[in-house]
Length: 347
Image 1 (cartoon, helix red, strand yellow):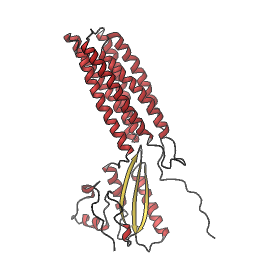
Image 2 (tube, rainbow, N blue to C red):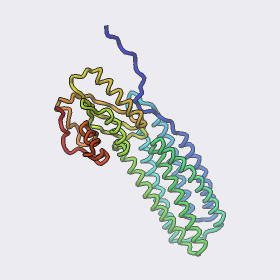
Image 3 (cartoon, helix red, strand yellow):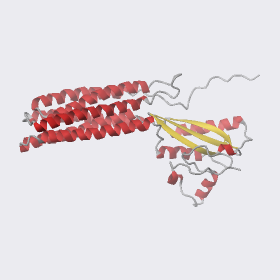
Image 4 (cartoon, helix red, strand yellow):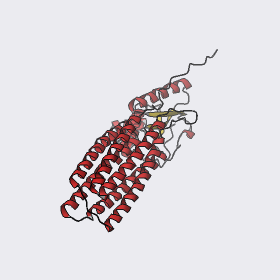
């Protein structure tokens, strides 16, 4: 009598990570820098320092959005979200980009008004000293967020880190503007620098919006990651086993891949299943946070070929032999290019 096998423990699914501790760090940094920059603005009356403080308010709003997004992204898959919730990170990046645009408009409007109605700047030394301290806080936190974002492949943390680093360079520009006013006595230099700060913020916001849209559009994994998967698969290629239709996509810090496995039609289901289990385990070990799905096909069936317009190429057994003999270029030369013709059908 057939028996029902015990439920298996998932080993190939995406691992959820709780990265909210970095969001709390960003919130704390935003609160500290807002207090410092507002104090510096009140001491000096510089519209440049005011614009710098306004951007820090955006940083705080963005940090709260980051916290919410990371909390949602860390939720495990459920009956309504079989692939998890990691795309929530892209909404945070999009919101941050929109908030940056709003801050830029406020900054540029204030700078034009101050350019038309210039006012003297006071207490330059103390004000700049406080601004430098705020910039140092932002710089340290930005480096921490960028490092964590790249390590965990979190677009939210990378976006927040880049935003804070932009804030650092913005502060540098404002400090230069205030110093120029103090040295030259030309009061209109302060709003000119503030306007340029607004332009820089617009560029940052646009880049963040582009990244979030790309993520929501299921952008493929990087060329290097696709090549790494293809190299693992090529280790299983033989005269009987071939692969094609490798496609990948990025969803937050999770990555998903699928590939078609071609074997002789005479193979048993068990033998094909064992091969796919080995393939999935090997890819999972070699490339972090990738969920690979294999589709088994008989190599003799013409319907097993020409599945997709775009896919990442995987060398066949003949390709590997030719490469060993020095007669074929490496797979990297064609990595990421869509297939324009149907692959050669196996006999």
